[in-house]
Amino acid sequence: MRGIEVNPEILSGKPVINGTRIPVYVILNLLSESYSINEIIEIYPDLTREDILECIKYASKVIERQEIYEIT
Image 1 (cartoon, helix red, strand yellow):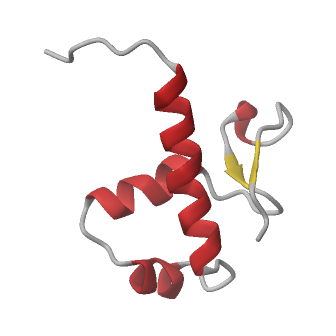
Image 2 (spheres, rainbow, N blue to C red):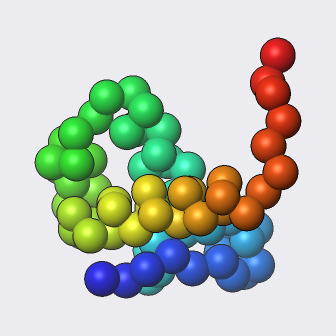
């Protein structure tokens, strides 16, 4: 498992899967469009199931710590 990396030198500091330039938001967008984990791995064969689950865990922790506002 690689985890998530935030580095200002990589994609302007957007969270990426460690050791890649694949942003967490790209994986989350694919999941929101009903792509399965296996389909995402077909698109990004260097990723593992654990990498994708780490994206979900990261997003969950970010949302848990933020104040949430209704989107209109």
